[in-house]
Length: 177
Image 1 (spheres, helix red, strand yellow):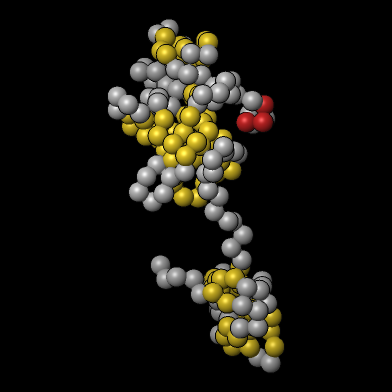
Image 2: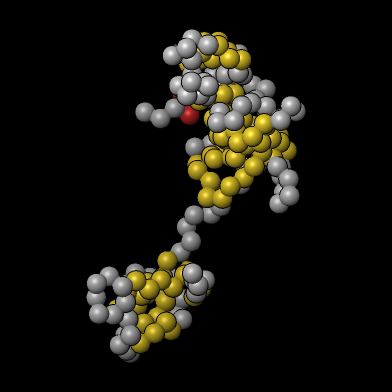
């Protein structure tokens, strides 16, 4: 895929004989000009000519920051810690994948707090040392979604096996209606 072309207001994009004007552009003296700073987008929408538009990059990349509450999925474990993929900062999904370090089991979905920033080579350091933080979703070895029975234990509804987990006391703002 070729990189998208950047433009600024007033840039001449093409002749109106080559394209149909879409959003973020205007037609003047037979040419189509950009009315926005953004990316040039050409789409064939069943027309003879492609529609040319200019779109802005409205989604800024959110980064985990110290003190941010993150939702993450445990991907691997070793005796000292677990590696996770950070999926959300607060209730906002991340476009890019970030890694972190925490203590749980593979497949667990965990609410945690960022306590140290990562960089390209390293991971974010996370903690669950607050009552509101810990495992939100876990699956048993039987594959069933486990039910929290205390702040430190979850139980499989099929086999009734209990497993130790630091269970999150999920706050209402993190629950979806």
